[in-house]
Amino acid sequence: MKIFLAGATGALGRSLVPQLTAAGHGVVGTTRSPAKASLLRDLGAEPVVVDGLDRDAVLAAVAAARPDAIVHEMTALSGLTDLRRFARAFEQTNRLRTEGLAHLLEAARRNGVEKVVAQSYTGWPYARSGGPVKHEDDPLDPDPPAQMRTTLDAIRRLETDVTAAGGVALRYGGFYGPGTGMAPGGDQWELVMRRKFPLVGDGGGIWSFAQIDDAAAATVAALARWTPGEVYNICDDDPAPLRDWLPYLARTIGAPPPRHVPRWVGRLLGAHLVALTCEIRGSSNAKARQELGWTPRWRSWREGFAALGRGEGGGGGNGGGVSRPAASAPRGA
Image 1 (cartoon, rainbow, N blue to C red):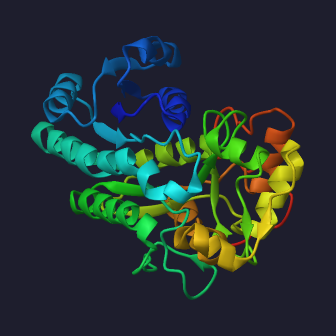
Image 2 (cartoon, helix red, strand yellow; image 1 turned 90 degrees about the vertical axis):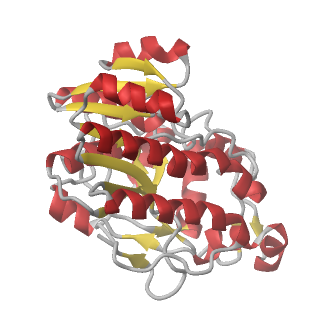
């Protein structure tokens, strides 16, 4: 297939392009920066410089590419350095999730492209009630904290619009690995290193992670095993509470232990911070395993974080599809 990859120079795009070409696909990749065109050529993609929020430019680029499938991986997630200003950090990404997707869906309709894959998120949007691990048919949070509301609205709209058009939404877990915020020099990495990522209350919020190469491999699998209108959680086998993974990460990468603050102090910093640290639910990858034939190579964040600590980047090279022995039995799949 010929793939139009919107957002090809992001962390996921940089992992996805080589995996798509290795699977025999041709890739036209977009970037907003002319300076990054050479990077896309080196990765194996044909570069197109276009702003995903420029409707006319997007329509023209897709028409010129004449793709068989469109993959939406456009985000603007750099600069997440202050957990208190959650809504502000996601403003541009939410526009890309809604306006950017609308332009791509219009381009797909105009050019007869039936396959559209869009990046969604499964790190915290599920309802903060019931069991600790959620599946795709479980409800999303009906009343998120104010700082998270616009982001969840954008996620809902993305999933509704793409599945209504016969596309697929991939709810990725929290990314880590090369090029992500959870890698040396990344925003989240620096928060941990500088003790600005607190462990609030009991730290019982359940997080689900996805190593970046595994996320890319799942995207390739979704294109190969196409089922219109589906939503998949793309994460590892080991959803875990903050009180487990955050101290482990700090120890592994040589950071100081995270600060522990009472829940009431966390509430003063923001209800969303309490939700993220104490209340959110994890995600099951069972549907993606069964229907996409995808297996995360990094089955647990424990392995991946340890690789980061060794300076290996946590990278899997060729992505997922082949199980790596886990440090502990899979949980939550």
